[in-house]
Amino acid sequence: MYAQMVKATGKGVKTREQMDENERHFQDRIDNDIKIEAKDWMPEGYRKTLKRQISQHAHSEIVGQLPEGNWITRAPTLERKTILLAKVQDEAGHGLYLYCAAETLGISRDEMTEQLLSGKAKYSSIFNYPTLTWADMGAIGWLVDGAAIMNQVPLQYCSYGPYARAMVRICKEESFHQRQGFDIMNVLAKGSEAQKAMAQDALNRWWWPALMMFGPSDADSVHSAQSFAWNIKQNSNDELRQKFVDQTVPQAEFLGLNVPDSDLKWNDKKNGYDFGAINWDEFFAVIAGDGPCNKERLGARQKAWNDGAWFREALIVNAEKRAACKQAAE
Ligand code: 3HC
Image (tube, rainbow, N blue to C red):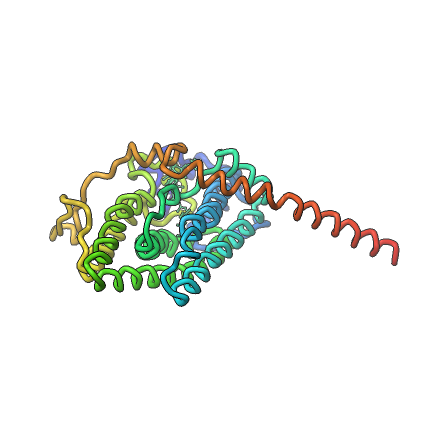
């Protein structure tokens, strides 16, 4: 099914006739919804795509702790502090499951870290924006985790078993994150004039970067056609972005907040909202390293890596000593 669809869209995806025997067998498994496991034969391109996507996803979870971690000491109540702490810890856990899923493809954690720190591997554009007020914790949970869920629910059904299974738990936890963010926004929006203004300001700053999270428009998406063919992607970047807008605008209305888009308008014909043009120059600048916080975020990860060097060395020395003791006892 997918191979036929891709044949029509082109973009360098092999047709059935161009595939060799192994590739045809592999594509048949994909088309019959049979999961691919780590030890199964797979085309090198499939392995490479998954290493790229899963490691970038893992980096996003890890770097994504930084903007919110910034507010743990300043949360307004003990309850908010414990919830935020738990959420940020969840993101660390997501990063670890995803690094493990990527490792099954034959890439080490050290290699992935090196790719992140050298700028070779990307992480989500959204985490290069600053968190200026407490309302940003609400906007991130509501919009950023909301967008993440929209994109990640289909990944539970993707063709690569270890990735699909990691996504099941991640999606459950993201739902809790989204709700705690909406709750923060709800309390602020129903609070004093100053609190409502803070919530509106956060929505103004996070709305457009949240739409950019879904990636470039379909016309500019380099990997989509092949990822559809391999059932890594099931929805296009624009489809998911549209679903997110349609789901989120009524929530903003419920909060009594205005989505910062003068072109936003319900369209009966498509049964969804029309929305304004995204600033793609900003998106491409951010993913090229020129966002407001790129240097700060990578600087923080570099420092964590350097600060942890003594601990990694200690683990290796300890493992060597234990192995030597075991050998001596045999
Ligand atoms: N930020 C940074 N880079 C992005 C991006 C974004 N928002 N959207 C796309 N890109 C990059 C791609 O990685 C690719 O670059 P590369 O070739 O150097 O890897 C390039 O832009 C072209 O985009 P494509 O549409 O061709 O790329 P994909 O087919 O990979 O689609 C994607 C992009 C939809 C993000 C897809 O990779 C995906 O679904 N990834 C898994 C989910 C993910 O990583 N989410 C990140 C957020 S996680 C999160 O938010 C944590 C949560 O706790 C809040």
